Length: 278
Ligand SMILES: [Zn+2]
Image 1: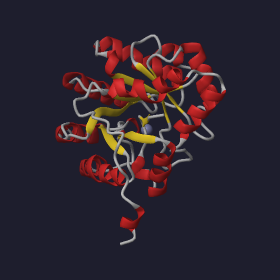
Image 2: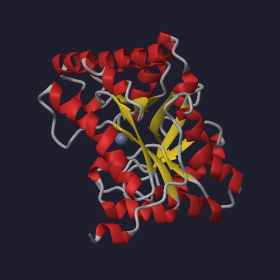
Image 3: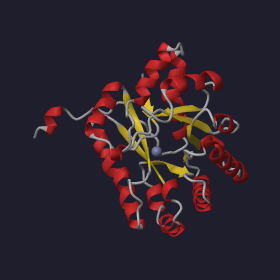
């Protein structure tokens, strides 16, 4: 089965992860901009990071047979510093215009503060103006309240919902995000977030249309093979292969297809191991 990993932070992962992902059938991935483990103090640090994920990470992934794209933004965790947000957004255009950038993201909320809401709204409108896909991060606590704020802003601004992924849904907020025409994402982690079983239950309740699943792996306890575990569990739980294909490939493909830069290549040949021995 062809798998697209629509949300993963490969910057924080190893070459072993790339090899394991390839072996398990993951061929294409999207890396949204995130934080670096500590808060950045300079706009320049964002710009250097954008360049790394748009260029170096794409080359690194290709060596292991994976077609890697990025989404660019100021993330919600660092959006509370409005001076820094202003400086980054002033210089962000060249990175959004980069041929490996397929979306604005991840934007959204972390603690639901007024500064975060301002940065979210500005970047949502930036994406709308450019007709780009958007990856939105729902806050962890309280998730339903954050989902309500985000959905209200999307409606108020009248932006195109079919280009938006609202990610990290769980049982407490899925009813709110499913009221929209946005794609709704579920994230599977080993201990927190969702398990494959909970994904299966949410699918049975809400259907597969506009549903997307990701591993969102980063520096924390997370798993770059989450999607493969989801596929295995869904099969054992009686879901049809067409439904699974829609969940781990077709829906993400449709979302990112709104970007002219999205040309997923499922046939990149990994560099032979002998090359690495030189
Ligand atoms: Zn993320």
